[in-house]
Figure 1 (cartoon, one colour):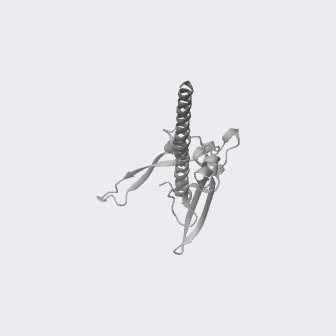
Figure 2 (cartoon, rainbow, N blue to C red; figure 1 turned 135 degrees about the vertical axis):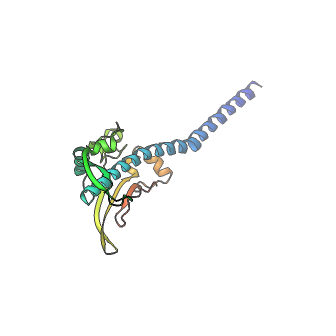
Figure 3 (tube, one colour; figure 1 turned 135 degrees about the horizontal axis):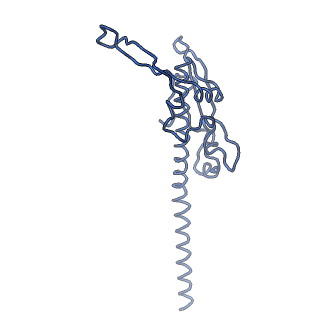
Amino acid sequence: MKLRLILQILMAVIIIGLVYVIYNYSIMAPVRFNKEVDSRKEVVIQKLKDIRDIEGLYLNMHGKYCSTFDSLILFVTNEEIPLVKLSARPGDSTFTNPIRDTVGYIAIIDSLFKDRADFKPQNLMNIPFSNYNGSAFDQFSLQVAVVEKGNVPVNVIEVFAANKFFLKGKEKEMKRYNIDPEDGLRFGSMTEPSTDGNWE
């Protein structure tokens, strides 16, 4: 009778242990991994949006995209944009051809990032989470070019961060859940004049 009770208790403990292992590794492990992936992607996407905003302003001011992060950092750190006041011309009730007066200048960094204490221009090229275990940061791939579309030259840009960089430390899970390490997050295209992100 005592032996039977001990066996029943052992069986119950084994069953509880198996249930825990199944729950923790088969059910919760992918949930935890997906939450971590989403959390990391959110940070990388914000960085890509920052780069896109700065490159868009650079294109408007210089007529082309900036081809290096060093130049882009100097641009966002040192350059200013004009503050323009629009006023109607005499007799122009439709405001179709306003008078443009430059009333001052504002630093680009203050214009775009005044409410972002976390924005550090010197880290613009660094892919978040790629410095796993204290290694050096991997950098975003930045490509710009001019291509012909309908016999018209257009500026194109593509900025890319591979999964293998911002998911460092999660290689086993990436393999287990069939995540391509060479795929990743990007905006733009080297063949189309688009700056859409593949997360949008």
